[in-house]
Length: 494
Image (cartoon, rainbow, N blue to C red; front, side, top):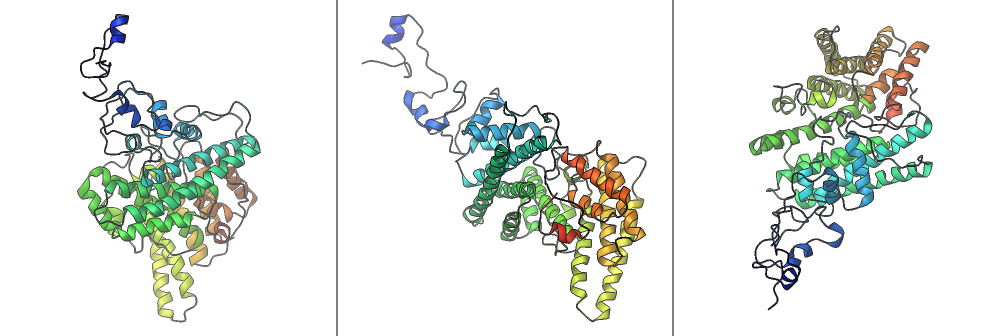
């Protein structure tokens, strides 16, 4: 009987005739037919390199429980090809890996270009393998397409004079100048990927999270997908962010609220706690910025000084890569204080229609307490040695002051206190532009919109022009609207 090279005891005639050793391939288990391994891979999803891959007879690229392992020395390009079989998707992700700006305020971790892109997880769950994995990958591709479109648009309009170089290398740009059709195509791709990701997250919520014994990993990736969709909608200036945010709130409600989610994650692992906490922080930041810009009611931090916001924070290392301070350039206490200002603004809108004076007196006492608390926060900051977090804190403090003066105390925009706070914040932002990445776009719009004198308006425009010359911001609209609630409306801008 003719024997083949891939059998347990190779003794094939072909090798004998050619005088070469008949070696059994180590990557196949004993007694396995040569076709069994290759047949488990669809034609369009061949592994990037067969050399050194350890597999079993049941291993497929579609199973997260398979024993398939890729060698550590496999080049990153091959890993991306494995996760994204489609060439266009690979090109977008390669672009994204050069910049790593998916964090809410565009502060990437040094050792992880894309915060939500876990290579090990997506090797086990490449495109097309699960609704949870695909919802996250689609959301990342949406941000990548919109970021690439923004670069091309800024180059076309003259805001970027040279091809950008990302923190992790030069992105693969086309050999010819981008055209308007290319920019429009990328925006359309980003829009469809973003909307698709939101719908897939909704499906994943129903399919994966209805069971009490849901895997913590699925919950984490769905929340990260929604946060990434919020970012892409912010870049689009779109309104579908509301759907993503509502889905996230529904998931939080299904899981029993932030406190229960964090307690469960803490019992699971420190990794799960960090991931869940980071997603909740992202959503709280979104909620706070939306309320600050629109005057609407907070929906996540529902009460003052909520314990879960502080109790599960890792304050041992405030400079750590997974801290709120690193991601947002703010102390979490300042964001909580901003949320309480938002509560008072919403409360004020309700009380103006009531005639009971005792309610208004109580409200006014809360406003005075907030003003005193702002003074305490600012007095504790050393102005001679400002860190990035200190700068963010001061900018937010003066933004809150402008909000309190105009929305709660009824000061006119021309009031000295309003102009002084706005000018102080703008000067700090201008001073820090080339030192730190401060991603507080809504506060910039608020403090810039109230400037009345020509010098202040020029300074405000300078800060926005600088943003357009970076890779953080792309939105072709005017910024000189005085009533920021009317201007911002339901736009989501970080």
